[in-house]
Length: 330
Image 1 (cartoon, rainbow, N blue to C red):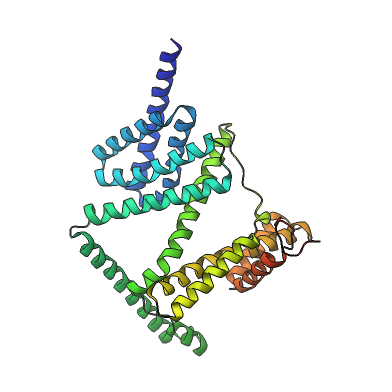
Image 2 (image 1 turned 180 degrees about the horizontal axis):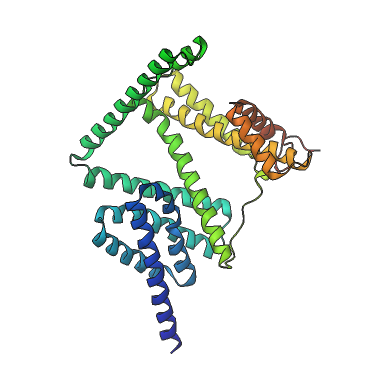
């Protein structure tokens, strides 16, 4: 009798959450500017995983996909389902087993990368009529449109006299976009995009689950973010090796240098911002909102180099004494 009640409860909850998933998917499909609601799609899957098991969650995903395929588009259903089902199931798994936040973010980032890869393959081999050649042609058209827009913008600024000679010279030095340029920066930006997607997914799911009284691990305060000097030393060694490969004109060297440059600069920037936040909050006792405004203002004024230097100095000197293996111990 208890098993029957449990199964009935699971079916009812799966039905309700499946309806929510379908409504969200159709809303974002018919109203493109509401596509931001896609970030909510993994939440119902995570809730079902936590309340029941992966079988109930997976069954809900399949039912939702069939309904959306019937009402709108099988391709849309396949692409979105791949993304939110993988993310939702992964979140449910990590939260149920009380994984560390850092481990959860890493696993989510890997799953996001897999989802992007699957969606790209769907786009190439199902949506594009000519497969890989059609995909390359599509990318070339986008690049041509972007380059044309950039050229028109330059001419407009010149004709309107809205920029001085120095600004125009800097604008003219912007390289023309090519597939080679895109491939050079793609690995690093792809890793950052997956990491950001993992962070956003976890943050939104955590906020909703806490409202439902689930126990979910919190992030450490932003001001406590730091780079372990061992990790920093490893990154510097790898970067030096990549520079040597680049000097020898080896094909992989240029790509590894670009990849590591993007990642190292991004992490140092975050570390510098965290260090600044620590001192503004703890030493100067500024409010959280004021600190955010100050940091945004400095970033908008293109002063990010300051934070990069601060992040590098903090990695070496450990001003906040957060690294147990810091170089200079008192």
